[in-house]
Image (tube, rainbow, N blue to C red; front, side):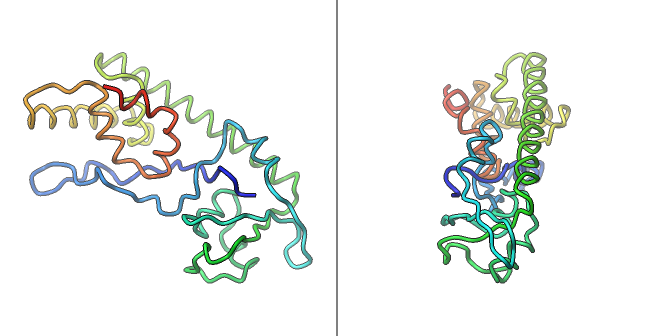
Length: 217
């Protein structure tokens, strides 16, 4: 059963270095992550695996029965389960542009169940390690720059794909633009709020647990 979870959501929105005619960023309302089916449950992967419904069929072998939701796409479902898009397409006789919500469920071929579960746990471990690394970089930037919180800087580090120098540049640019427009230095989280709007929907959902701290001025 699909339940609460979806793919990792590790792709950020477009590079906010793109600007409009007056030099201001035009990316703050980006919603580029149209393929997301949610957030891969790296912190609770065993419970997620226990929640899945497995079945077998002569034509595709062992598969997961994925209950579709309104925002599901073929690519998003394939990414969620770590399988090839073509395999999902063939197993359900889908065209690439078919709308999944028109079906109550789709079959997701996974090969050997033990291999699938092992791969899911390895994916979860890799994601948690990546997040820990990004959090460490965010904390280091926050300490070096003084003003911003680690939560604010985490947004910028994710936007910069882990590049600390670029994350610092993006933060300082947004801060400078705020001062230029208002004449007042923003609280650290105020800049972070604007940065968060640049993120894809999938990444915003992954940061949902930080929302209260991020948006509290």
